[in-house]
Each structure stands twice: as structure tokens, then as C-alpha cells.
Length: 141
Image (tube, rainbow, N blue to C red):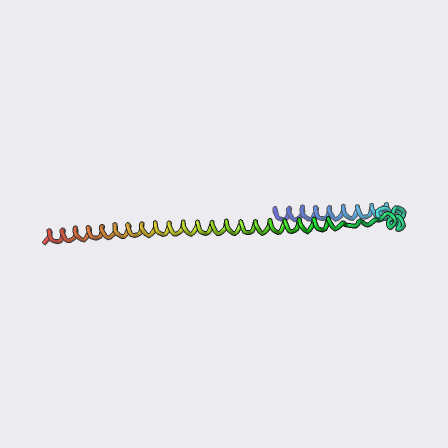
């Protein structure tokens, strides 16, 4: 029963939306406001800009040679600064790799020593257990 009511409500909502859309289109068609929305503004723009005014007001600037040399020098300085920064970054990365290598070697050595100690402790425990078992076997004979 609830499904039937749900479908009915859904159909009513869709019908209302379609009806509103059609009513809006009819209203817009009657008013014919579409012509006002698409005015041709080209005429107004032509009045504002004449070709003669634009070309007459344009001037060219001559760049002096000193300015060109200054730009070249600035470019060289930027290049040198970038090369120096790249070298510094490379050196810092190499140092970081070396430090990481040393740390890993130290850690590996610590783990190796710990494993040797653990193996020795196990060997001692096994030896002690074997001795106790032998003692118990000898006592029970």
C-alpha cells in the first residue's frame, strides 16, 4: 500500500514540475522579451573605438643597450644562484644518505649482537635443561 502511495506522490510531483515549466514557457512566449535580451551592441562599440584614434595614439619605445646588458647580467646571476642552490641541495642530500647509512649499520650491528646474546641464552638454557633431564634419568634408574 505504501508503494502505491509513493508512486502516486512521485507522479504528482513530476506532473506539477512539467506543468510549471510549460506555464513559464507560455508566459515568456506571450511577453516576447527574447528580442530585448539579444540586442546588438556592435553599433555602440564601433562608435567608441575608431581605427584612426587607436593607431595615432600608439607609440614605440626603444630599449637602450644598457638595459639589455642589465637583463643579461641579472639572468646570469639567477643562473649562478640556481647552480649554487642545486649544489647545496646535492651536498645536503649526500650528507643525509651518509648519516642514514651509518645509522643503519649501527642498527644492524646492534641487532646482530642482540641475536648472538639471545642465541647464547637459548644455548645455555638448552644445556641446563639437558643436564637436568640427565640428572632426573640417573636418579630414576
